[in-house]
Image (tube, rainbow, N blue to C red; front, side):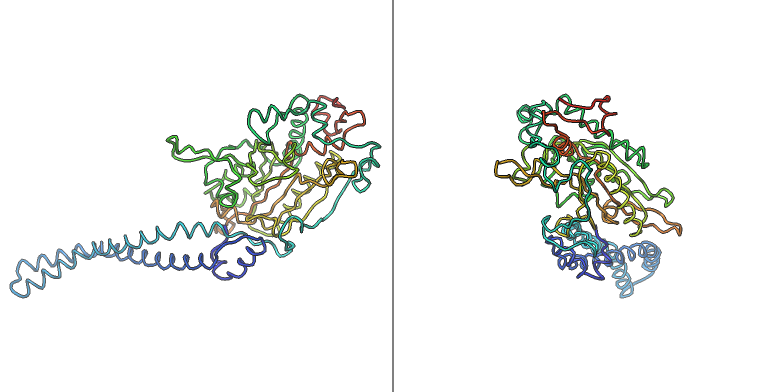
Amino acid sequence: MIDLKRLRADPDHFKRGARDKGIEVDIDRLLELDGQRRTLLAGQEAGRAEQKKLGKEIGPQIGALKRQLKEATGKDRTALQDSLRALEQRPLALKAEIQAYDERIAEIEPPWRHLWLEVPQPADPDVPIGGSPAENVEVRRWHPDWFDPARGFRSNKGFDPRTHLELVKDLKLVDFERGVKMAGTRQYVLTGDGMRLQQAVLRMALDLVAGEHGFTPMSVPVLVREECMVGTGFFPAGRDQAYHVAESQRGAGHDLFLVGTGEVGLMALHADEILDEAQLPLKYATVSTCFRREAGAAGRDTAGLFRVHQFEKVEQVLICRADEAESRRWHETMLGIVESLLKRLELPYRFVQCCTGDLGPKNADMIDVECWMPGRGDDDADGRPTGAWGETHSASRLYDYQCRRLNLRYRDAGGKTVFCHSLNNTVAACPRILIPILELYQNADGSITVPEALRPYMDGRERIG
């Protein structure tokens, strides 16, 4: 949620921000409604102040008039009676006037708030302007000595690769057919070593972020109220991606939604709280099941483990002081954690600066991390994929956008309450991260070498198959 004071002072800044992100929102209409609301609130406040003042004064005034009436006659009595009636009617008229303000405010606030929630956070000035992921900019890349993506799979390993779809079928690591039978498209069942491998990755990632970097591991709900989704910025724009549990139709007081990331629960923990500055930064991590409808997604990604409806993630969030430089430092730190994980797994990766059109409404900046996946990309003359980068991680900087929506503040050294800044980062997302592991660590005989960093979590095993 953006700062309305800043919007009023510089609406063109936010219009440019929305345009750069490709998001349509009627900022002029929002300002019009905001002006009407402020005028009405001023009238309402004045009316209530008058009502309070009148409440103190009217009693003695009515008492005085009634005492005068006892001795008054003729025209004097009539005048006093008129004054008394007018005085007795004043509270009723004032009440009706305030009620009219209340009703008009109640009419304006829903569309006013809806438009306010739709205004995206403008991207930082150093974010490249672009309309789609195709205009994202590579920042840097890394690969282990034993696999250089630029050389092609055969040059690196001496044989033609199988895709992860072929590998999991041959090694009985995933059962897609029974997953689809139970729950429909884009569902799967990890079996045997497939499940062990996923749990090894998740445990390694949690140990890294919690044990080595001091993020507190937390268990948070994955089924949350709508206000948690709105507060974290996933609604209204991402509503079509969320699974909706209509509990209100069953007599409950509120509906629930399945989250697409543990970020929702971690951020909503402190909604409507005022923290002490000394508590910051708050560093949290969670391992959670996540759900996405993937509405509208199509193409090759719908096959296999790349784009599924249910997945597991190690997610981290950080809540810090309202300082841009501090937010930027933490962003680099969180990206460094991902880099450390991928280097230990020896997976080729690249950092990609997302352009404005790929940031979404809530992010001021976002860096995607992509791993090399031999089973992706265009097909060669023999119909085999030539490999391509695929997104496996994403780290975002949000400044106070989420915290305003969540009403999450801290009290600084001067006693002033300030909205916090927040950041989030995917440390590991499964089963997607299994794709580069399986495809890059495959052997000519169809087996999979277990990455050395994962062996302690696989009972010391060096090979699958």
